[in-house]
Image 1 (tube, each protein chain N blue to C red):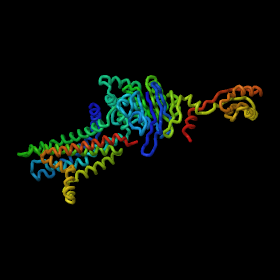
Image 2: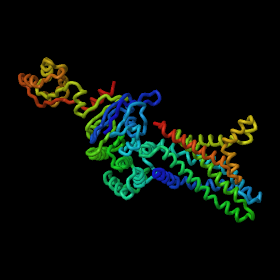
Image 3: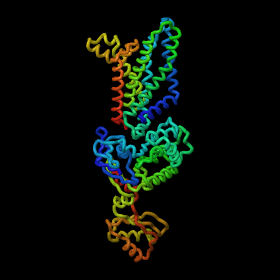
Image 4: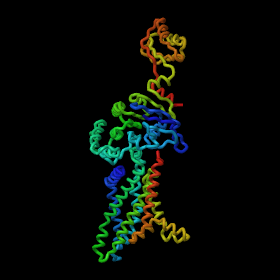
Length: 239
Length: 310
């Protein structure tokens, strides 16, 4: 536990000690707020539905940017050799890196809290369920993208490649269950695809319906990719 | 302390280490010598537990690295090639981070860092980001990192590469000092370095051990018969002629010239024949005189080239 905490702390400091963190936050808040407030006053509804509709799409781009350097940079600079000859287990490294990115995501989401506060101020009757669900769902979708991105970052030592691959893989898994794709599939396959899709589970949670199936889906997804990351790291497939 | 048995490592089809065995005793400073890509770094990475061998075993103390790599890692301080460090951290932050992960008690961390600063001469840069350090200081921070938990074993992969002559001398002195109570393995392809620091040398080439021993042993064993260097006052042609006529002489070469009638000659005797007495008699007999006389021991460089060039 102590090792995880130490590396977590170092990684998080790494995010916040560089200008990148602040640029990142600003980009996220501007993009999400602009997309949301564009239609908010026209629709005249005190809900965050459209906010949470856009959020996964923003995450699709931002999460790979958070994870691309996690392992790839250490491989490139050689510090992986320093890190992995310290008395630390491989899974401690993976968990610490994952949680540091997750903590960054959580800070991002916390910084967006003025939006629901504005809505509470403006609206007379506000349905709390979808907002809480929306935040929970966003955290889970974000975490899933992070786990996927972390895994891809362990596979190579080029940050740009890590980013592009994570973006492509994330996009693929996210749109698997979109109606457009499902229409052309036979029934049983459509069911499987819509279950595997990152997006469809998010929609349920964002409606404020918290179903254990959706939670189990996200936790398994995250677990799977953290497990694969650990295996990829243990393979030591670099020189 | 460290025993390596039948170590083989393949990267895909490429054989990097071919059945290597050696052992290192407590308190020894052992130098790995070999051309680039000979397998030095791979051997070190396997000992530190970073890489798993394809076959064979490495034991540190009583512990097998592949069984319990964490226990072994605690005993080892490792300086990787090119000295990778976390560039974004400041020197004291970095040393603190390593100290904490190495499990040094909280209240002792500052004390340890101060000690490392003193030993490695880091006073001036302690507050600087590592990315701004010169190569020499980076290397010193790297060394401080390897020693902060006071490990029994130090494994240093090319510890002086890229340093200037003064820094090299400093690092060597440091390694020698450490070698008194620690077991050290260091790799290099700089020959004077091993001669200056190591009590034993292991020469690796193409994944195989091609020679090992103390620098003196290697020079004697590998260089064949000892040559004799002699400086004689006398007419050159005549001297060469007489020397060549001597029994048990294989070759005579004129090496250098001091004055018009003083030349240095190198004489190669037949194996294990002692020519000295007969040589001096020959010179006296001809009324020449010997001005200098010594056995010529092959330099480590010659040994190295002989063992690693085909």
